[in-house]
Image 1: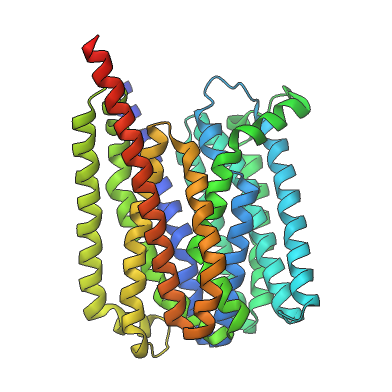
Image 2 (image 1 turned 60 degrees about the horizontal axis):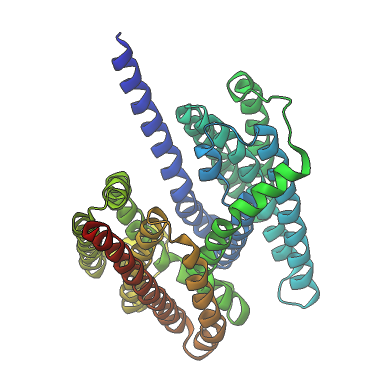
Length: 425
């Protein structure tokens, strides 16, 4: 086999295993909810939904937006030991926040002891994901994305099987999460040992300055990730505050297709980002705008197809999947998919503004969305239940889209003016 064939095969392995791991990671909650509704009931599905959302919110803080920075650090200005120590510190902070949150909800009477324990157990399970991710980033950095994908795939399959086994045999969500935690921990220890030669943990460590440098460099990305995830799940937190677990479960059932729209939009724009970057950096602004508009059009078209499919098949399919009659929520499903369309467009804007090196404006936009969410969402859920949750979600996504569009227009115009001045000279 020639070197070119080996390279192509390696790239294919990287793509395949990363895709498998990413798909499993995105789809595991769907499968778990299907099992929970059949083994533990609708209320348990609602508890899982808020525990999963809360665990992932803390996970985004624990990861601290370091992955892309780590992967692109090809000259290793920071050693892997720097990244590892920084990750251990963020996980410690993540779990401290989780403990404080769970104690607060327990003391104030918002959560029962079992619900608080379930949320804490989920945060602990996500801490394993968080620790694993810094090793996967190291493998990615060293050209072994295939190994990182295999690691993720193995851990998800084993922990998922353990959770399903626990649900079927005990009917207890809390016990099932603990089973998944210990299995995930075992897989992580196993994979750390198996990949130690590839990871190559050197003795180089830049101490506190190196770790603090990572905190400073990655803070904007961390802020955007946390705010972005909070906003996509704000209705869940509002429902958790003012309604019961059954309503929480029903909202999550109809919200699942949103992530189909999001994944479709990512599949559409991610392959074009490199071309858009070179087009922008080479000063081909008209060609850049053409590419931009084509992707916007493709996302709108894909969203329209999803909306048509959801109108005819959405409720029947979701009702069968989750063993729950959702026929009263057809209009809510359509509205939340409209919000999903804007979520996909906003994700594209995040990528576009980053490659234009205008990402410093993104946190301000999401902060504005968060402020609106804190003002509106809980009030709208109190007044109109699931419909209020859905409409508040759509309004926030539209606001963010409008603000990101304005930022893009201003930054594109500035880039155009710079090009025109250069041409005039």
